[in-house]
Amino acid sequence: MENTKEMKIAVYPGSFDPVTKGHLDILERASSMFDKVIIAVLKNNSKKSYMPTSDRVELIRKSIEEMETLKNVEVGSFEGLTIDYARKTGAKFLIRGLRAVSDFEYEMQLSQTNQAIAPEIGTVFLITKPKYNFISSGIVKELSSLGQDVSKFVPKSVVEYLQKHKQNV
Ligand code: ADP
Image (cartoon, rainbow, N blue to C red; front, top):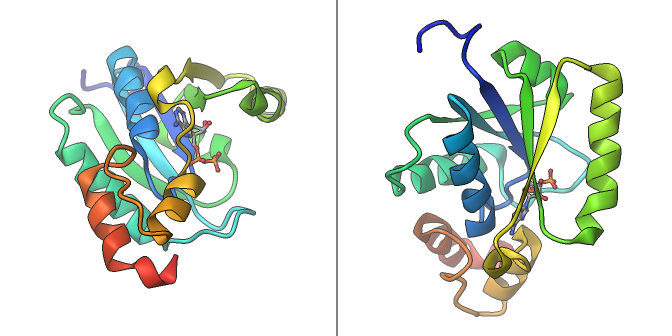
C-alpha cells in the first residue's frame, strides 16, 4: 500500500532498556494487525536509562532482523510527547502491552491523557502471553549483572550486549 493516508499505522512506544522477548511478542502481534508498526524508543524520559538511545534502537533493529515475520516494522526514536511523534508519522494508533493489573492503572491514565489531548489517536492494549508475564527490562538487567543467563528472556543480540557491558549495569 503506497498511500500512507490509507495505511493503518501504529506506534509502539517505550523505553526498551533493553528490548525483551515480551516486547517482541507484543510487536509481532501488532505487526499482524496493522499495515505498518513503528517501534519507537523514547529518549530522555523521566526514567534514568541504562543504555544510550542509539544502542537501544540498534538492539531492536538486530532483534527484528533475526525474526522473519516482522517485515512491516520500522524502528525509530523520539523526544517529547508520543502523540506528537504519532502525528508526525501518520499513525492513528498506539500499542501498549499489559502484563498484570499493576500495569493497568498507569496505562489507563496515560491512555486517557492521550485521548484528551489527541482524540484522533487511539491506544490498543495487547495482553502478554503468560510465559512472558514476569519479564521486565529491569529484572533482566538485574539477573544479568548477577551472572544469570538471560537468554530465555531476551533476544540473542541483547544477551551479547549485556555480557559485553556487564560491569556497567
Ligand atoms: P515504558 O517505560 O514506556 O513502560 P517499557 O520498555 O518498560 O517502556 O515497556 C514498553 C511497553 O511494553 C509497555 O506498554 C509495557 O507494559 C510493555 N511491556 C513490557 N514488558 C512486557 C512483557 N514482558 N510483555 C508484554 N508487554 C510488555
